[in-house]
Length: 391
Length: 179
Image (cartoon, rainbow over all chains, first blue to last red; front, side, top):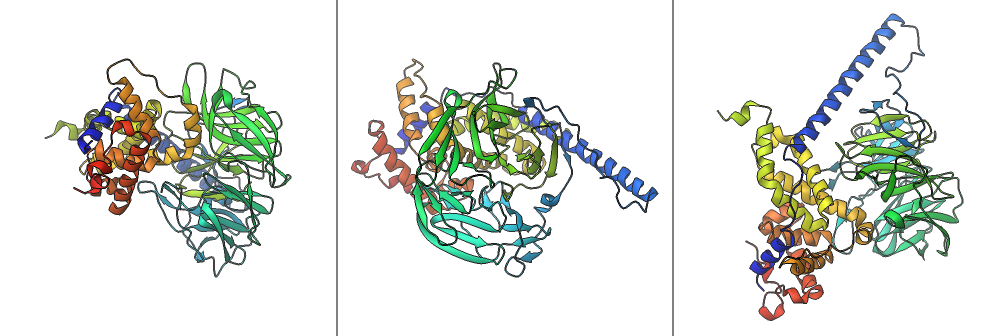
């Protein structure tokens, strides 16, 4: 067969695929997004102006209320929807995308709140990794330059991914091909441990870290470098509660009616319990069909992003909160599908107030409080890769 | 004066999409293997194009949206490949004359890693040169050559009945020759 024959085969293979949305769909989606941003910008300007006026009239009031009014809270119902445009209240993580103020080598952190790697979303190339300390200063990670990870097929991914910063914010781990790099962020010391395989992902479990890729997972001691192979897929592993037992991790796997939640013992890898995931507590025929990104456990709750459906529509974006004991989906943040990108809203962890931190819109980092429905923005410019200490 | 330029660009954009979306959708489908996901990925790429239209319209919007689409498709496919492999059963033959062949080609493509698929689709469906393929994927020409070589070798292994050029016809590396 010649090249022409391969061309013919590919044409035949796709010949029955036809667009079913009007050509103007993308333009209308872009228009709605621009409108939302413009409205939000005006609202923010008005709020800031009002706040500034109040401060001018009461110059001695050092305990002035926040310039931005609280977002309207929805109820704590099982299925919740975000406001059209969240109010961005700022907070320590809002400095995540600030320019580095110092190199890590000269200004180690006491505790890092987050790691951040700018990404060119058109070329998917990663920039220099940064560390945001609890003092609000962003450091450049100048002591090591981790490479993009890759799998056996040569498919690359950015060096930084959620899960690589320890919950205490003191250590970063970078899985690489054939090694693991451990960075003590409090001293800027770097250790490199050879470890076989195309390693791409990390999940902290107590003071050790699961590191793995497509076909293997290790439990690694980041101090000694000792690595023990363990069963299970790191793609499905839920990042455990830092205050929980390091002897067991949860896994979320499967799709649609086959979604399951497993408890796996470490380091022996024994599956201790497995139950089907049920969306029955949700109202209106909502159900989770599939999860993506990392799941994060806090107490008896697990938060993870996924695709959802109802009896009349499918493929919507959502964030589910599950009861880790029963496997029931007890809360769902319904993010729809209009104006959001595919796999838009990966969960990045929990904060200390019991809110879920997730991506939202292009570059947005937001907090969602499942108990109250409160949905507020942290920063709107974080288009790069993020790893939070929030476990 | 071009009447399309008198508005905010919508007419030009819609004309562009009408001319290109069919082929781009088919390309996305060949890479990700699911028509609904391909449609979603194309819509995401076209949204990004609309947001950048004022700066892209006078350049090469097709190249712009193609780069977005391919890289997003590879990235998306990687994030969820395990789930995808079990989530979607093989599509059924539609009964027309090419149905069986269509299924065979799709099944063979399913066996390739996403970037190898992308290289094959760009080179032999979109008919791009090695240099243009490298530019779309953001990789070197050498990577395109090696990925194409590996992809064709893999296709020969998993789908010998399709007869994708093999060593016997002297073309095991022949398709690496750039244009």
